[in-house]
Image 1 (tube, helix red, strand yellow):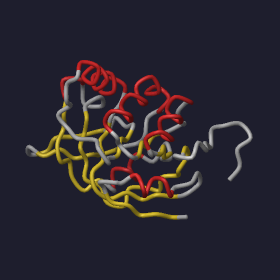
Image 2: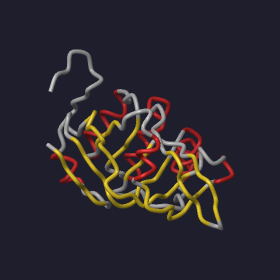
Image 3: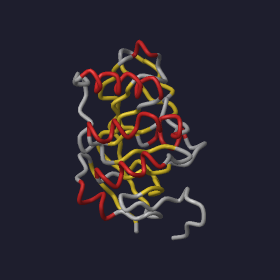
Image 4: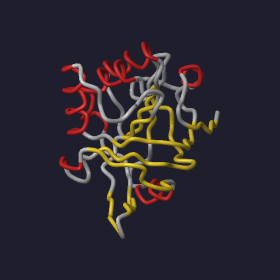
Length: 184
């Protein structure tokens, strides 16, 4: 199936998704890489609230190439980064903050898969090497948090239109394209 969805995303929509479905996203997407995930989990463990709301949202494992022109940020390239690096953090983030979609490259592990089932979320794969295509879906930068971590590691809040194609690679039913012997 092919789906178009707008943020915020509810659990019922995610529970309909099956491995192999294609998804195009419009609305708000948050980029989070290693250092932002680490900072976020540290805040969660201290009982602190992050400065942004991920509930019903989309996390994109991406360190965009951003350029500031006349006090406005432009995203030049926004390709995915390897998601497995976030495996140690993602379960905590999903359980506590309830994003519904995680987008990245290369898949994630069993801990994340179990959390997707528990919470009602899904992991979507975006094609590596398509950073310019991804950037073309970005309509504007709504905000940026934690620039002190560096431009690629900051949390970029992006307004996107028909971001995709994203392939459902791990669904809320425990299916994963990354498990040995899986076929759709």
